[in-house]
Length: 324
Image (cartoon, rainbow, N blue to C red; front, side, top):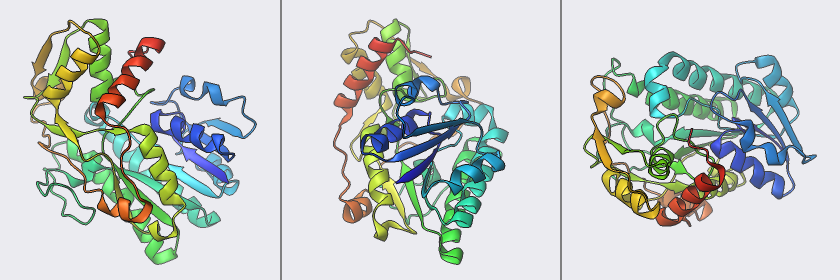
């Protein structure tokens, strides 16, 4: 296959690139390196099937050339992390909505199949746990920038589904629940790499809010296999799928587990949301996916659980000293 990955130098994109190249596909990556890193894909650059364009997906001329040369698009490029979303809301909205618009228009022009990566954030403050793909969405007011990310990704989903319904474009939507693993950094608010970095450096392990938020964490390898499985399953076209892990932990419990597994003497400190993000920041108390739809269509179930994930992340940080 000839495959284009937007955001392919990012955390998930680099693992997906690696997986597809290993099985013999030809991979084109576009990434502006705003959150992705060349180090993530450096080991792939000698592969004759790997091609890299350091450019934004907002450059439609470059995107047109790349889409015209490929058959399948994995659209991963997006604003990521709560801190980036809160502090750069304009870039978040523009990159998510306008970037996806470009991807879908060009995919329609060249009849490329598209996977849109969405997020569990689209469920907002819903308490209908576990979240099912057809559940109602509950959001806060537009004055809270937190909800701009949820809304922008929902628009991405609406647009992808509209292209499928009206123009018969083959689209698949994957809603991710806290993907983690090696190469992820804590710079933009990702909780596990942030806490692991703090623990290994002997700094205070920071828990935002009261720590009773309940989250599930998914290993990046499971997400990559699910993405490829969905793209290669005809029955997945025009559908939305939760991809994650349905076994969770409180954020306080996570901090204690990381401290213990890292052998750290760091203290655990609690930071009010207002200090960590912005005044009036709203969060969800519990976020658990219903995975039955993905299991039925592609046999999806998570294979790597939290302790194994943390072992892999801690080992990666120790080997690479990449705490940024």
